Image (cartoon, rainbow, N blue to C red; front, side):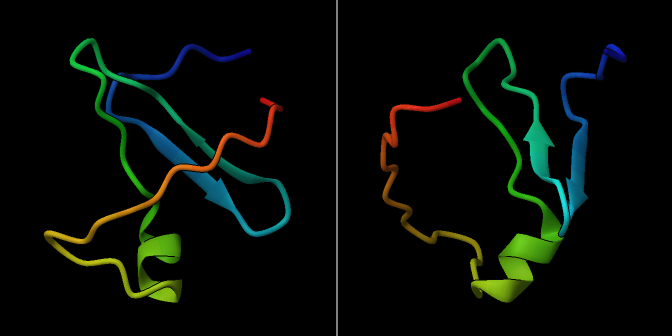
Length: 53
């Protein structure tokens, strides 16, 4: 697998998204998903553990 930069985000509607968690525990939400779900600054997100990776 190609090594990704800490801030890299790769998104494809067919394969989903791959994001990298930074040392501070931060990650990016792909722009396509932010637009699709109207996620803006100060948005609150609920994380659901589906038991898969």
